[in-house]
Length: 317
Ligand SMILES: Cc1cc2nc3c(=O)[nH]c(=O)nc-3n(C[C@H](O)[C@H](O)[C@H](O)COP(=O)(O)OP(=O)(O)OC[C@H]3O[C@@H](n4cnc5c(N)ncnc54)[C@H](O)[C@@H]3O)c2cc1C
Image (cartoon, rainbow, N blue to C red; front, top):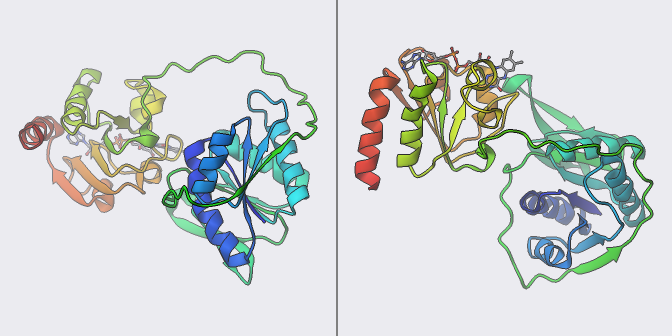
């Protein structure tokens, strides 16, 4: 059996595509697990490729990795699961590593590909800030792999697909930790990871106020999403951390990424390398960012941005 789980619905659909491929090649069933969800979600999971959905009715409230891992362990043992795909969110990574601990098996985090060779599971993982790709295989079962969001498109939805929905209530060992308080982060409510168009700002901007030039461009493109390099969020604090893109920030995959006044260090590229079209604006013709760009404009951002915004407004209305 191949099992997929993510607490995020859209990521679960993405995982089902890869899960379907592996299950078909292995001649196994594809199971999705829903914890604390409902039957409608289970039906959606079948429409996106699951053969069977296990809906967990055990009384678990907010996410606690120990309790969720205990539930998944019981599903894995009952259904003889050999391959487990989990969404690479913060919760998903903690869950996967705990599950591998209690099942005493291997776990690979953030795989960019999962494939089979002689029916054994192998993965590709980008390492050293994107300078190398590690090929890793499993010597133990079940194989646990986490896959980042938006790496794989879901299969086309098929409401005619048939599948089984099973409700289960397992006994769950209560977590030894309790949530004392949840404090919401102060954010500007941007979600760069979901954005289709990002205008990203770097140290080329001289003042915080000047970032409005990038905002105007984003608005003209109807994108309205502003990203930034680390110094803008972490050092200067001109933007909140939810704008920060890169190795230690968010990983993004927009259709269009416009890097303005960003030098293109590997740690920044690590967060935006999967973008569709990359446009770089930089006054230094030798800036590294141009190596990762499809289109480059060599020039002063203070001259280029207003002109670009004007032209785009004219074209797009
Ligand atoms: C462990 C680690 C993790 C890191 N993680 C991240 C991360 O997640 N994200 C990230 O971004 N960085 C990260 N960094 C930092 C990274 O190495 C770079 O220092 C950072 O990306 C540089 O930001 P920048 O390109 O905005 O600034 P700079 O490197 O200072 O580049 C500014 C660019 O603006 C151009 N410029 C200047 N004036 C103008 C103008 N008027 N018009 C047009 N162009 C102009 C310059 O030519 C230059 O290319 C990390 C570093 C480490 C060590």
